[in-house]
Length: 212
Image 1 (tube, helix red, strand yellow):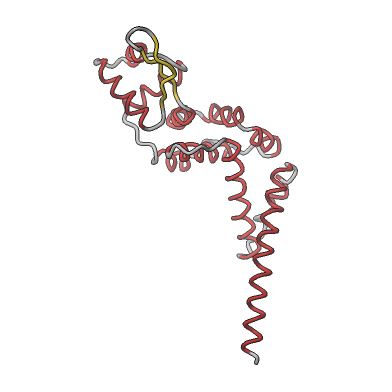
Image 2: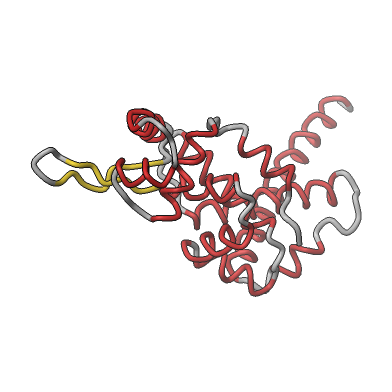
């Protein structure tokens, strides 16, 4: 399947990068780590201070981090954060690398992928991680996978059960081959059933009051 351009654009609107910032970030993702001088040489930019200012901005956006400071002058070695790497891949529409990265960091996604190879799941997970780390919130890839699947379950069940849209829950039945997906669905069904029972009780009370 092709990369979802709408999802890409919706995610990147939360990450404002100039052309220079994108170039430095891409170079750092490609080299894994490096000092400002190496990045300056690779970037082709005319002025070295531009790279230093750009790295500072990327740090403020939680896209780059300092791995270590060494030497007498405290030379800084920079590396992309997970968020920075995902953002770089999104900017370049690197579908395969996004899939590989999500699979690498999430055992739950690897289980999901065995049953459903739709890459949209990986893109949604990447988006969750990018947005969470924008606020510097601790949010694992596994948590992002569960959050996205649970949200989709709720939307589909609501559409089929309450809005009478047929076939909306077929994918849940298929993915229930994955135990944690089945557990999520069953837990939400029980929660919703309890809510409906409570609503019915309230309606019964109201009916009794109206018929007195």
